[in-house]
Image 1 (cartoon, rainbow, N blue to C red):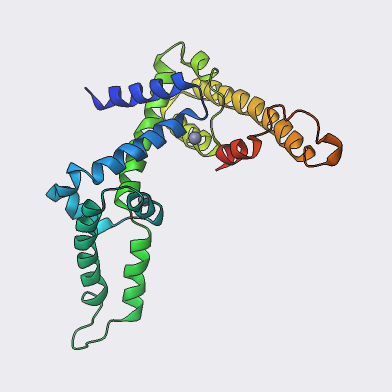
Image 2 (image 1 turned 180 degrees about the vertical axis):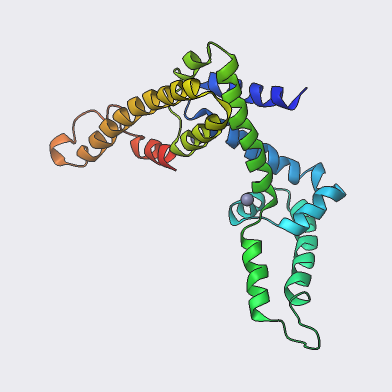
Length: 228
Ligand SMILES: [Zn+2]
Ligand SMILES: [Zn+2]
């Protein structure tokens, strides 16, 4: 199956669910598949191990791997990563004829480590291709605008990233139609969310305590998902 087809299928599956931002659904599934992959067979592949040794993992992904049950895979991977990183930190930062590492060089090594993560880089690469595929589907499928309009919302992060990808992929006219659709959907959702948040706050006032919660019970959770 071509790579493009894979992105198209994942977008279509997420859009069929109609529960939340479809790009968040694609990303959550991808995060989970990538965690299973790295703690499974991929961990033993030499070319993968070279990359994990070099790039390491961000805090979010270290926690996510730690919370999975496969501690042996994680231990093996962290062992070689820590070994290769400690060489950089303690050997590569020692200037000639000296025994002690140079603090400035060490800070640079530590800073670089903070900015690299094997899983983030794979996920970002896949998601970038997904945003382009989304624009391509918009351009080539005449029903896609209507399918977009059946989505509950596009979270603000994905709204920005979709608009950015579409600005490169679509003609001026199609791009403005695409942006109008995104705005129509999100404006409507924001209106609903504001009403639900307002009602949620009112429910803490004794005058409303016996009233129905309406749709506001999960309003805070939905607002966080939309904004983050
Ligand atoms: Zn999203
Ligand atoms: Zn990461």
